[in-house]
Image (cartoon, rainbow, N blue to C red; front, side, top):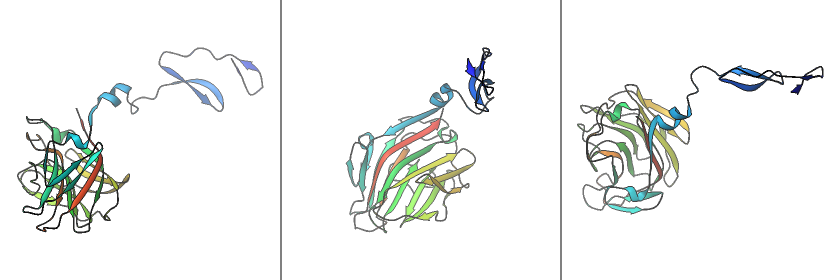
Amino acid sequence: MYVNATPKWARLPKGMDGQYFKLVSGLPAWADAPAGGGGTPESILMGCMVIALSGFDVYGTAGTVIKESWGAKVSSPGTMPYTGYAFYRYMDVDAPSLFDKNPQFELYLRFSSATTDVLVIVGGTAGAWGTTAHKKFGIFINAGALKIISSDGTTQTTSASLMALSADTWYRIRCKLTSAGQIEVWVDGVSKGTKSTNLPSGVLTAAHGCPQILAVGDDLPTQQTARFASLKVMHDY
């Protein structure tokens, strides 16, 4: 029962199966559920694989890595190849078609100085970010310039700078590979650009990073440092 605009008491008949209750011009009414687009709880919760990774989940390291509950501090060593890394391994067997499942990662990231090179990539063996034969995608912060890096296993390329990042500043960075489409990067929730060339596809080879975070001294004996926290990785089933 409700009071209509007369005002007068009125009775609303029961609805049909599948209908829901809503207001129309300020009065209660039954309506059909919208078709498609909304998804179901099952598709929202079970349609993808999500993992949140702490610093203590790191599988392998180089340089100096200080592990924390929410992340880690990665510093390059003072000897060649001047590369420090925190390496997360997916598993000890190939991950079938991972690059075809719209993989993405998100984390908070900061670096120590304008000369620090930092990479966060899915793919590549531990510490090896420049090997073209290793399929990969991710971000490359080159002396403060945020870029997208990727390899299809034959050719590795890097995008132009998407924006300038400042040292000793936390950024929330998300990077997503839309299979056979593009790689897109967001900083603090805002899209900064895309890359659509040399996209990886197919299998993530066993023992390749998923992901790995590298601090590269670039042949400088001066220690370079990157910090990360709240790392998450997600892909479709």
